Length: 117
Image (cartoon, rainbow, N blue to C red):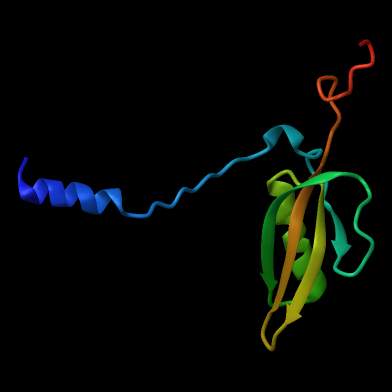
């Protein structure tokens, strides 16, 4: 092997890598046309177990309720059951709303503990 090839192999062997994983939980989608429930920051979070799907952001030039409605639409598109830790930032020209989209943990026959042992 040439010295240039060995040098190239040594350099690429030391290079860092970044992995990106993306997934969707489509089997957990809510009923079509149903908007996710909103839990504002500082309110009692849901007591039912849940998985976090995504951190979402919406903006509106109108009002805070319009921005929350846009956030609900985003969450509904990805199949979320609710939005938690929803909070807003009011600027001079627009309102920005952030929240975490969640899905409830659903018990399936396979996930139930066995009692026949």
